[in-house]
Length: 385
Ligand SMILES: O=C(O)CCC(=O)C(=O)O
Image (tube, rainbow, N blue to C red; front, side, top):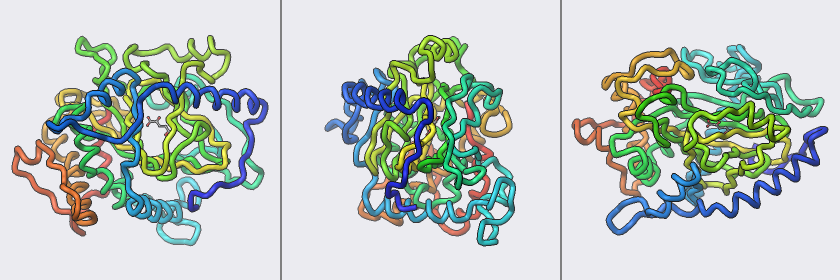
């Protein structure tokens, strides 16, 4: 895998309709005015045009955030990860007989699907938040029985991903959107292999605050989606612009009215290698089976407002439900400190981000072998709301 195009398969009986939908969606996406470089005002604030477009659309594409040498590091790590995957679901060894990635982890790490399948749609999994099953095209006869399409707790498997997590501009965006005392949510790698990558059925991410008297458009936080190879209408995430403002949406009804899962108002996130999208977790979003010839590898990194998690009972989607106290948040936010320090070591020319909660409490984090051993299973502490 080097990101070069492979042979595409087609969308079966839906192929013609799907191709028209992809083209139309791309045209609609280009009209939104929600993309460009990350930039700040002279006073150091995230530029108001970016803030306005993010809150209007529920997503924004930051262009050219990850530099070529950084993408090279990420690609190398992704190769290593893919080579070390278990030979099949539940196997302790990889195809070469070595201990497999995450085989000794306690946390949930590897999510499998049949090629081009939709493992969550129409099931009760994840609190039933993916109510409609996506069309499942047929994969080529030589495809494996199952593929890994999602890797959770990904910072423990990739130092390059940890360094992206400590990116000063991205963390400054997190502070602008969620407040300087923002907290982690979770991190993941989405792997959409050409001709095999699974669908992620339409859903909204939040679980805990929909009925809160304090509910607003940002209460369930956001995800950064960093792109190694870029993403297209065919393999990328689709979003219904503005849907993060609408509360909980009746997805079944929308799909029934549309007559298929091709929601008429949705648009694809289009990105080049090194672009990083920010997507509101309340936005209605999903992705189709990747029948295209292009790889998509996305580094997901989620962040919350502190007041959305402190004292709140988690939703139990990513780990055991628990009430999140200050100590839990502090422990989970170590990863921000490690990310910043790991980045400082690799890119000494950059000005490291200063994370206010660490500065205020006099906490400092050093990324070294001990820290590396200490983050095994860190995602058991994800702040899942
Ligand atoms: O990357 C994808 O295909 C889906 C992403 C997604 O649903 C999420 O981050 O919540």
